[in-house]
Image 1 (tube, one colour):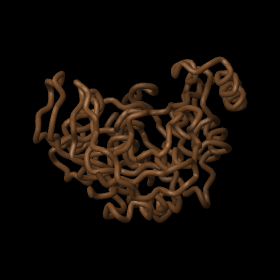
Image 2 (cartoon, one colour):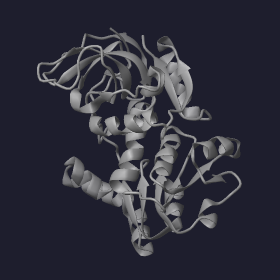
Image 3 (tube, helix red, strand yellow):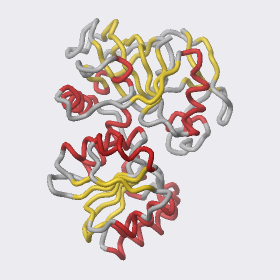
Length: 331
């Protein structure tokens, strides 16, 4: 099969030929019709996550997929050939930038019926990130105040809509040119990060979803009410996260050191910091599909590329400027 892989960390992705997938009893064999790209794909290629996700190279990239089921394992009961599905493939089984892929049924859901396959492919990783931050960790309820950084990005565009659906007052940071677009998604306040200081203008927030890290995360702690929570998806990882992954004591110490500054600052302010590294979850995707079909969430696709232009599509993730997601079409 055609695929895009990299041979060693920091080396470019290029087209290769790979073997047909080997299926397990609980797997679905899916024809790949579209692949949503994520910055995580590039961060893995660059080696930023090799401690957390020690992959063997060469490695086929791609976490998100939308397509059609063509075969099911003997233990599959909820799906059948011909089903139109979408998924964020679990860690250590990634590789959606190919023609066909075997995916565990627990990672898969029927794709939303109201959107096309490209829009469906744009959703899994970013929608699961938003769900796990706002619903699982934040338990956001009506009347609360939520700040979502980088509102025009892949996670941001979905998180704004989900927070609004949950009944929150939503603020976001973005460039001024995207203000009208983000108000249309449900943002009540759009802070121009170039000319405004969100930390000076916002206060009393229940949750911040931070995708930038560093000084931005540190400043975000100050807009929270006491008892509020900052969820970081760009790091730094925490000892609690290391324990959750079952990492060894050395890595727990390292992550403790990396996150000590932000955890200490949060403690002094009476707020909480949690690092989120989202996980695959087909049941959550099923609930997200319901929200899409109900009109509460609209996928945002900023760019599409043909399969043979995958390297250019991956490179575009570094330049930004395109609202929403970049999607590669099937081979």
